[in-house]
Image 1 (tube, rainbow, N blue to C red):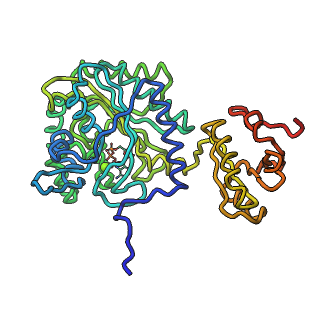
Image 2 (cartoon, helix red, strand yellow):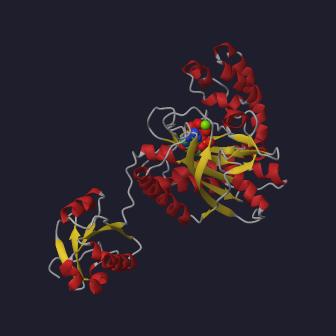
Image 3 (cartoon, rainbow, N blue to C red):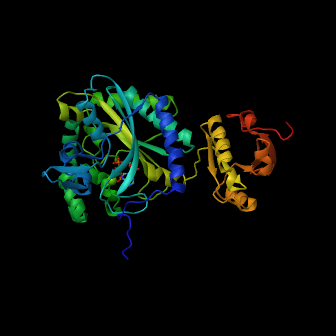
Length: 424
Ligand code: ATP
Ligand code: MG
């Protein structure tokens, strides 16, 4: 029989991994909420032209990474490869562009890349977009927010930051860079030769060791950026210094999308592998103008969830749930056990109760409670039902206590570490 498999580069996220994913996402959500961000959900499919127009022809994403198809009415759709273009489209379409907007999103994105560790065809990003504030204080705020996220997770990735100027500065610089790189064309592979023509900037972050020295000695974008932009950038760097946020100024840092201007940044982990960018972002002050004729400043970043989870080795737990396992010694007590389960669930939303479906052997049921890492096993047998009671076994301590079910809420007080006392 044909065995079906998931599509190449698209993975199942099984419960063991999902647990860590959810715990991580909860930290991300609560942190961005503290900074006033609200959730936006946009569709997976968009008009292909949205991405061409925003991300740009000549970029890897648009040229070769999009999942694009034509529907029965000959319209071309693409599965979203990133989140910013869709957010901007949604803001314009829903008339939200007149106010300051702080939005977060979380979900799957799709890019037809060569699958490898940290690089998948369906992957997940958690991102924010901050719309409507032009100055360096907004730049500072999102970097500060990213740093709060790392602090809340307990990691400290390295911040690399650069100023890539506005589109006019960049145009001048690209011509100069092109002239310089043309001299070394014979060292380029076909892909790089193609980039030299279509996306010259991106050569700067080439990982090809042959180009390392050539890139090191290349003209720097910094020398072609207007003094106003340089001044603003210095103000941002000063704020970062004042707040002791460490960063590396990386003159070679460019982003693979056309819409960025001035601020670009990345957070990388300290390994030397290629897929070590955990979060990437920057300013995109000209994207709205290209889509709605109105200049609206904006900026944002996106975190790669798979990369971040791999970086912390999935070692993250939502510590605040408490799990109970009902051990039922006879099937006829099933409905009694459901009553007890509901009492426990009603005491706190953080209490999870699951039930044994094997009603005979207590030993086997306790073993199961252990296996699923239950915090407490609730035992229900003849005596308990007769006396309107249940037994609560602390699986970590091994201690056991008989409790009247009308008094469960006293013993299982939420937010008190479930401290029913042995001698109470
Ligand atoms: P890279 O240089 O690693 O290809 P990128 O410049 O394409 O990254 P962005 O488009 O800025 O990345 O996406 C933001 C983040 O999303 C990345 O830093 C990374 O953590 C994650 N990411 C991007 N593409 C993938 C992918 N194919 N699989 C897993 N995560 C990804
Ligand atoms: Mg990429």
